[in-house]
Image: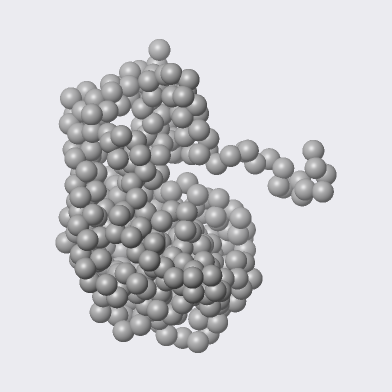
Length: 405
């Protein structure tokens, strides 16, 4: 053992649990087994190949040396920040206080450094993307949760109100990470009524202390109903423009532009032009990664300037949204055929199957060659990597796994 390593840093797993499950599934497939791998977190076509949006790669190939090689400004190219924010809110006059980050994870990380003290607690919905816990722990922050609505049910207003009140009483401030719309891992979004209710709770909490709502956007381009996504963004824009709650967004081009390896995104507060906030974000950038990559920022600027490319990209997004919708419908049909409830996907790459003892159920499914990701609330299923034709096999393996052998 490396004694120089702090004792508190010696008990980690060798690999991220999701990546480890994916590696095991791939190894068994390479060994000749028939494997259904629903752990994947990137969009694959029906032949199992990574989907790379052609519009994006065409623009990438056009980048000049000076759009790739120089340092970007520490807080990011202003044109990039404005263009990325306007992909979500086309009419905002500026990006507000904002900075470029290495993907959405970078945006989440520096929000912890700027809006919570070590030892305080972040609030998010459960179930949640498991790296939220890692990000919180690495920044000395605890993680509190309130329940995401189950399919067909309304937001548990009492639980959310109690959670907000407890945190405000304990620490005098609130940071909420909200992955809506197209929630990971349930694949569902808040209803307009739920969103209005939560906004009211946040306004009430803001009368007693600072409240920051950070919207974690990753999958908005892959939704069953783009109109519902637009309506949600309008609701959040209205809340942000009020100014009582600090509303920001973690923006990423990993999934939206299939540029996972470019590691580029932003943390933006479009309705708050405040030098102090901007200086804090810039300082955090300088003290962690310093500058983000220039090339992906240049690409987003180019995309914003080329109307035809935007039309082509929109068409690609609609195609893959329809593929995901078809996969979700096939899985719902297979689940119902096996006597289980449908999952009602609305957008994104995943759905979550509620089960008791998810780790044990996951292990039993692996014995059948079906790999998924256990969460405290159930099983995360990657529609992004599972063919519609595989849905019956998945549902049958799940039904068998729910009955201990």
